[in-house]
Image 1 (tube, rainbow, N blue to C red):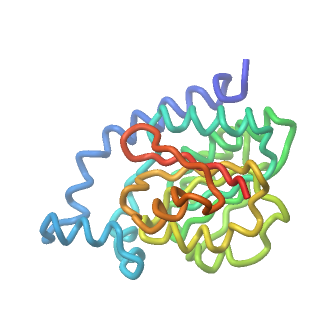
Image 2: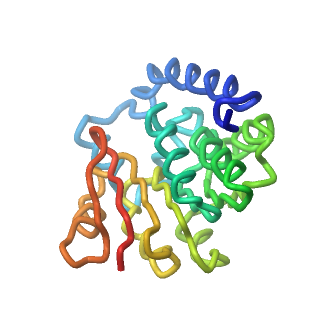
Amino acid sequence: MTTLNSEPVASLLDRLFTEADASRVDIPAAFAGMTDDQAHAMLGSRTEYLDLYTRMKDLPLPVSREAGSLLYVLARFGNARSIVEFGTSFGISTLHLAAAIRDNGGGRVITTEFEPSKIARARRNIEAGGLLDLVEIREGDALVTLSRDLPESIDLVLLDGAKGLYNDILDLLESRLRPGALLLCDNADMCPEYLERVRAIGGGYLSIPFADDVELSMKIG
């Protein structure tokens, strides 16, 4: 048995994913009064992300069940002890990462979220899973919260916040990525600059698409 498929984490995640599935019908309301083109532009914006995620503050916006399991597997396989997550939301992906840290023998997940109500919900969920001692939640804009006090070496990164900032977040973390560090980027297609960077020949990464909109990359230089 692993922490991920043992209680209290297993039933907690099942409930959270079920609630998240039910909340999908509320997503269009966050873009009320906007055209499809305007909504798409906002999703990838490097300047309007605070407004965007304020509109969606009551929505879980989690990774898929499959991506969550993949995160756990990657963290376990790489014996990750130091993980950085961009975009806490309700803490669903954080639970997967912290479960892996627990089963690896300890470490820390640094996760960042600017919306206070989401931080409160994430903290409750992570505490309910018995994993809060392994998680540091940083409140505020990730361009600030991830610009300081980072681990000397980072084993795994999850990018699942404001899509337009993926490249900027990588700028902040790149010097701390150990050789072999893994990056999982959700909705990667919404940040073409990031994809160009990690897919570039000789750019220091080996990168492959996973599923429809997830990019898995490994630091090789």
